[in-house]
Image 1 (tube, rainbow, N blue to C red):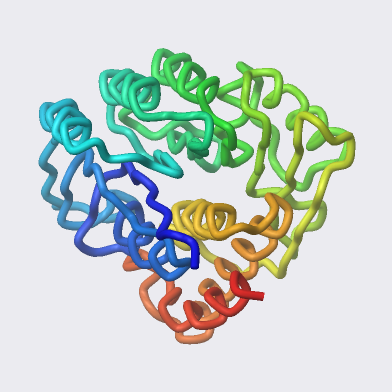
Image 2: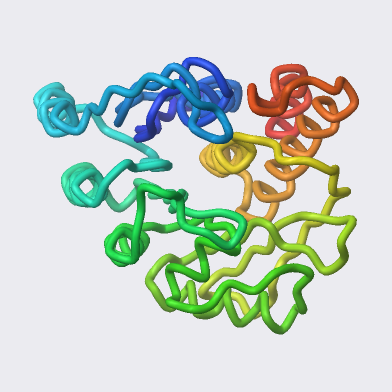
Length: 282
Protein backbone atom coordinates (compact mmCIF):
# COMPACT_ATOMS: atom_id res chain seq x y z
CA UNK A 1 0.00 0.00 0.00
CA UNK A 2 1.48 3.34 -1.01
CA UNK A 3 1.95 6.12 1.52
CA UNK A 4 -0.38 9.07 1.91
CA UNK A 5 0.48 11.97 -0.38
CA UNK A 6 0.51 15.52 0.96
CA UNK A 7 -0.30 18.82 -0.74
CA UNK A 8 0.32 22.30 0.64
CA UNK A 9 -2.73 24.46 -0.13
CA UNK A 10 -1.98 28.19 0.01
CA UNK A 11 -5.30 30.08 -0.06
CA UNK A 12 -7.48 32.35 2.03
CA UNK A 13 -10.30 30.85 4.08
CA UNK A 14 -13.86 32.16 4.07
CA UNK A 15 -16.25 30.91 6.74
CA UNK A 16 -19.22 31.03 4.35
CA UNK A 17 -19.12 30.61 0.58
CA UNK A 18 -17.49 27.23 -0.11
CA UNK A 19 -14.44 28.69 -1.82
CA UNK A 20 -10.68 28.68 -1.36
CA UNK A 21 -9.71 26.44 1.59
CA UNK A 22 -13.29 25.49 2.45
CA UNK A 23 -13.40 23.86 -0.98
CA UNK A 24 -9.79 22.67 -1.18
CA UNK A 25 -9.70 20.83 2.15
CA UNK A 26 -12.73 18.54 1.70
CA UNK A 27 -12.24 17.93 -2.01
CA UNK A 28 -8.52 17.13 -1.96
CA UNK A 29 -8.99 15.07 1.20
CA UNK A 30 -11.75 13.11 -0.55
CA UNK A 31 -9.20 12.24 -3.24
CA UNK A 32 -7.12 10.56 -0.56
CA UNK A 33 -4.55 13.36 -0.32
CA UNK A 34 -3.49 14.96 2.95
CA UNK A 35 -4.12 18.71 2.78
CA UNK A 36 -1.72 20.94 4.71
CA UNK A 37 -3.10 24.47 4.76
CA UNK A 38 -1.31 27.80 4.71
CA UNK A 39 -4.08 30.42 5.12
CA UNK A 40 -3.31 33.79 3.57
CA UNK A 41 -6.32 35.56 5.12
CA UNK A 42 -9.43 34.79 7.15
CA UNK A 43 -12.80 36.19 6.06
CA UNK A 44 -16.33 35.76 7.39
CA UNK A 45 -17.54 35.23 3.80
CA UNK A 46 -16.10 35.53 0.34
CA UNK A 47 -16.25 38.99 -1.23
CA UNK A 48 -18.35 38.30 -4.33
CA UNK A 49 -21.58 40.32 -4.20
CA UNK A 50 -21.53 40.25 -0.38
CA UNK A 51 -21.00 43.34 1.76
CA UNK A 52 -20.01 43.72 5.42
CA UNK A 53 -17.58 40.80 5.51
CA UNK A 54 -14.71 40.68 8.01
CA UNK A 55 -11.13 40.36 6.80
CA UNK A 56 -7.92 39.52 8.61
CA UNK A 57 -4.70 39.55 6.60
CA UNK A 58 -2.20 36.80 7.48
CA UNK A 59 0.74 37.86 5.32
CA UNK A 60 3.02 38.19 8.35
CA UNK A 61 2.32 34.58 9.33
CA UNK A 62 3.28 32.97 6.02
CA UNK A 63 7.06 32.94 6.38
CA UNK A 64 6.91 31.69 10.01
CA UNK A 65 4.55 28.94 8.79
CA UNK A 66 7.10 27.89 6.19
CA UNK A 67 10.02 28.03 8.62
CA UNK A 68 8.20 25.84 11.12
CA UNK A 69 7.29 23.30 8.45
CA UNK A 70 10.91 23.28 7.29
CA UNK A 71 12.10 22.62 10.85
CA UNK A 72 9.84 19.56 10.89
CA UNK A 73 11.34 18.35 7.60
CA UNK A 74 7.87 18.25 6.04
CA UNK A 75 7.77 17.16 2.38
CA UNK A 76 5.09 17.89 -0.19
CA UNK A 77 3.96 15.92 -3.22
CA UNK A 78 2.05 18.97 -4.39
CA UNK A 79 1.95 22.72 -3.81
CA UNK A 80 -1.35 24.34 -4.80
CA UNK A 81 -1.89 28.09 -4.65
CA UNK A 82 -5.08 30.03 -5.25
CA UNK A 83 -6.23 33.54 -4.34
CA UNK A 84 -3.35 35.64 -3.03
CA UNK A 85 -4.17 39.08 -1.70
CA UNK A 86 -1.08 41.09 -2.66
CA UNK A 87 2.14 41.12 -4.64
CA UNK A 88 3.96 40.48 -1.35
CA UNK A 89 2.00 37.26 -0.87
CA UNK A 90 2.80 36.18 -4.42
CA UNK A 91 6.48 36.80 -3.74
CA UNK A 92 6.32 34.77 -0.52
CA UNK A 93 4.68 31.85 -2.33
CA UNK A 94 7.38 31.98 -5.01
CA UNK A 95 9.94 31.64 -2.21
CA UNK A 96 7.94 28.82 -0.62
CA UNK A 97 8.04 26.88 -3.89
CA UNK A 98 11.80 27.42 -4.19
CA UNK A 99 12.22 26.13 -0.63
CA UNK A 100 9.94 23.09 -0.73
CA UNK A 101 9.73 21.89 -4.34
CA UNK A 102 11.62 18.71 -5.15
CA UNK A 103 11.87 16.85 -8.44
CA UNK A 104 8.77 14.90 -7.40
CA UNK A 105 6.66 17.88 -6.29
CA UNK A 106 3.85 19.04 -8.60
CA UNK A 107 3.14 22.77 -8.44
CA UNK A 108 -0.41 23.83 -9.39
CA UNK A 109 -1.17 27.55 -9.65
CA UNK A 110 -4.67 28.96 -9.97
CA UNK A 111 -3.87 32.62 -10.86
CA UNK A 112 -7.06 33.85 -9.22
CA UNK A 113 -7.19 37.57 -9.98
CA UNK A 114 -9.90 38.30 -12.56
CA UNK A 115 -13.17 37.19 -14.10
CA UNK A 116 -15.82 38.43 -16.51
CA UNK A 117 -13.33 40.56 -18.39
CA UNK A 118 -12.22 42.55 -15.32
CA UNK A 119 -9.44 42.40 -12.77
CA UNK A 120 -10.65 42.04 -9.19
CA UNK A 121 -10.99 45.52 -7.69
CA UNK A 122 -7.97 45.20 -5.36
CA UNK A 123 -5.57 44.24 -8.17
CA UNK A 124 -3.80 46.04 -11.01
CA UNK A 125 -1.36 45.34 -13.84
CA UNK A 126 1.53 45.11 -11.37
CA UNK A 127 -0.22 42.18 -9.70
CA UNK A 128 -0.65 40.43 -13.06
CA UNK A 129 3.06 40.86 -13.77
CA UNK A 130 3.91 39.35 -10.38
CA UNK A 131 1.53 36.46 -11.03
CA UNK A 132 3.44 35.67 -14.22
CA UNK A 133 6.52 35.00 -12.07
CA UNK A 134 4.52 32.52 -10.00
CA UNK A 135 3.10 30.81 -13.11
CA UNK A 136 6.65 30.32 -14.38
CA UNK A 137 7.34 28.13 -11.37
CA UNK A 138 4.24 25.99 -11.94
CA UNK A 139 3.88 22.61 -13.57
CA UNK A 140 0.15 23.23 -14.10
CA UNK A 141 -1.70 26.55 -14.29
CA UNK A 142 -5.50 26.82 -14.18
CA UNK A 143 -6.54 30.28 -15.44
CA UNK A 144 -9.91 31.35 -16.75
CA UNK A 145 -10.10 33.27 -20.02
CA UNK A 146 -9.98 36.66 -18.28
CA UNK A 147 -6.91 35.72 -16.26
CA UNK A 148 -5.27 34.35 -19.39
CA UNK A 149 -5.79 37.69 -21.13
CA UNK A 150 -4.18 39.61 -18.24
CA UNK A 151 -1.26 37.17 -18.03
CA UNK A 152 -0.61 37.60 -21.74
CA UNK A 153 -1.21 41.35 -21.85
CA UNK A 154 -4.05 40.92 -24.32
CA UNK A 155 -7.49 42.45 -24.58
CA UNK A 156 -10.22 40.24 -23.17
CA UNK A 157 -12.58 38.80 -25.77
CA UNK A 158 -16.19 37.99 -24.91
CA UNK A 159 -17.44 34.42 -25.57
CA UNK A 160 -18.23 32.39 -27.56
CA UNK A 161 -14.77 31.56 -28.84
CA UNK A 162 -13.21 29.79 -31.79
CA UNK A 163 -10.91 26.80 -31.40
CA UNK A 164 -8.16 28.75 -33.14
CA UNK A 165 -8.39 31.44 -30.46
CA UNK A 166 -8.39 28.95 -27.56
CA UNK A 167 -5.44 27.05 -28.97
CA UNK A 168 -3.46 30.24 -29.56
CA UNK A 169 -4.07 31.31 -25.95
CA UNK A 170 -2.98 27.92 -24.61
CA UNK A 171 0.17 27.95 -26.73
CA UNK A 172 1.12 31.40 -25.41
CA UNK A 173 0.40 30.38 -21.81
CA UNK A 174 2.68 27.36 -22.20
CA UNK A 175 5.42 29.73 -23.32
CA UNK A 176 5.28 31.40 -19.88
CA UNK A 177 6.76 28.24 -18.41
CA UNK A 178 4.28 25.62 -17.15
CA UNK A 179 4.28 22.22 -18.79
CA UNK A 180 0.47 21.97 -18.65
CA UNK A 181 -2.34 24.53 -19.00
CA UNK A 182 -5.95 23.89 -18.02
CA UNK A 183 -7.97 26.81 -19.37
CA UNK A 184 -11.46 27.31 -17.93
CA UNK A 185 -14.46 29.29 -19.14
CA UNK A 186 -14.14 27.79 -22.62
CA UNK A 187 -17.29 27.85 -24.73
CA UNK A 188 -18.09 27.65 -28.42
CA UNK A 189 -21.87 28.08 -27.99
CA UNK A 190 -23.88 30.15 -25.54
CA UNK A 191 -25.41 27.11 -23.83
CA UNK A 192 -22.14 25.35 -22.96
CA UNK A 193 -19.12 25.87 -20.74
CA UNK A 194 -15.99 23.86 -20.13
CA UNK A 195 -12.24 23.64 -20.24
CA UNK A 196 -9.37 23.01 -22.61
CA UNK A 197 -6.08 21.30 -21.75
CA UNK A 198 -2.76 21.77 -23.49
CA UNK A 199 0.61 20.18 -22.76
CA UNK A 200 4.03 21.32 -23.87
CA UNK A 201 4.94 17.87 -25.23
CA UNK A 202 1.64 17.22 -27.06
CA UNK A 203 0.21 19.01 -30.07
CA UNK A 204 -3.39 17.95 -29.44
CA UNK A 205 -5.71 20.06 -27.28
CA UNK A 206 -8.19 18.21 -25.07
CA UNK A 207 -11.67 19.71 -24.67
CA UNK A 208 -14.37 18.93 -22.15
CA UNK A 209 -17.67 20.83 -22.30
CA UNK A 210 -20.87 20.70 -20.28
CA UNK A 211 -24.27 22.35 -20.09
CA UNK A 212 -24.23 25.98 -18.94
CA UNK A 213 -26.75 27.10 -16.32
CA UNK A 214 -27.93 30.71 -15.94
CA UNK A 215 -26.54 32.76 -13.08
CA UNK A 216 -23.24 33.37 -11.31
CA UNK A 217 -21.97 30.50 -9.16
CA UNK A 218 -19.37 31.68 -6.69
CA UNK A 219 -16.43 29.47 -5.75
CA UNK A 220 -16.65 27.19 -8.77
CA UNK A 221 -13.18 28.15 -10.00
CA UNK A 222 -11.71 27.08 -6.66
CA UNK A 223 -13.81 23.94 -6.72
CA UNK A 224 -12.63 23.00 -10.21
CA UNK A 225 -8.95 23.63 -9.43
CA UNK A 226 -9.18 21.69 -6.17
CA UNK A 227 -10.87 18.72 -7.86
CA UNK A 228 -8.23 18.82 -10.60
CA UNK A 229 -5.45 18.86 -8.01
CA UNK A 230 -6.91 15.93 -6.10
CA UNK A 231 -7.44 13.84 -9.21
CA UNK A 232 -4.00 14.54 -10.67
CA UNK A 233 -2.15 13.82 -7.43
CA UNK A 234 -4.41 10.80 -7.08
CA UNK A 235 -2.81 9.31 -10.18
CA UNK A 236 -5.05 10.44 -13.05
CA UNK A 237 -3.65 12.00 -16.22
CA UNK A 238 -4.10 15.73 -16.69
CA UNK A 239 -6.81 15.03 -19.27
CA UNK A 240 -8.68 12.62 -16.99
CA UNK A 241 -8.27 15.06 -14.11
CA UNK A 242 -9.79 17.92 -16.10
CA UNK A 243 -12.74 15.76 -17.13
CA UNK A 244 -13.36 14.60 -13.56
CA UNK A 245 -13.03 18.17 -12.23
CA UNK A 246 -15.45 19.58 -14.79
CA UNK A 247 -18.06 16.87 -14.20
CA UNK A 248 -17.76 17.38 -10.44
CA UNK A 249 -18.06 21.17 -10.68
CA UNK A 250 -20.91 21.17 -13.18
CA UNK A 251 -22.75 18.60 -11.09
CA UNK A 252 -22.51 20.96 -8.12
CA UNK A 253 -23.82 23.84 -10.22
CA UNK A 254 -26.72 21.73 -11.49
CA UNK A 255 -27.78 20.72 -7.98
CA UNK A 256 -27.59 24.34 -6.84
CA UNK A 257 -29.57 25.59 -9.82
CA UNK A 258 -32.29 23.00 -9.36
CA UNK A 259 -32.55 23.77 -5.63
CA UNK A 260 -32.83 27.50 -6.30
CA UNK A 261 -30.60 28.38 -3.34
CA UNK A 262 -28.61 31.60 -2.86
CA UNK A 263 -25.62 31.13 -5.15
CA UNK A 264 -23.57 33.65 -3.17
CA UNK A 265 -23.34 31.06 -0.41
CA UNK A 266 -21.68 28.46 -2.60
CA UNK A 267 -22.65 25.45 -4.68
CA UNK A 268 -23.72 22.02 -3.48
CA UNK A 269 -20.54 20.03 -4.07
CA UNK A 270 -20.89 17.91 -0.93
CA UNK A 271 -23.44 15.54 -2.44
CA UNK A 272 -21.12 14.91 -5.37
CA UNK A 273 -18.11 13.83 -3.33
CA UNK A 274 -19.07 10.16 -3.43
CA UNK A 275 -19.05 10.10 -7.22
CA UNK A 276 -15.81 12.10 -7.27
CA UNK A 277 -14.12 9.53 -5.01
CA UNK A 278 -15.45 6.72 -7.23
CA UNK A 279 -14.09 8.35 -10.40
CA UNK A 280 -10.62 8.74 -8.93
CA UNK A 281 -10.61 5.12 -7.82
CA UNK A 282 -11.56 3.73 -11.25
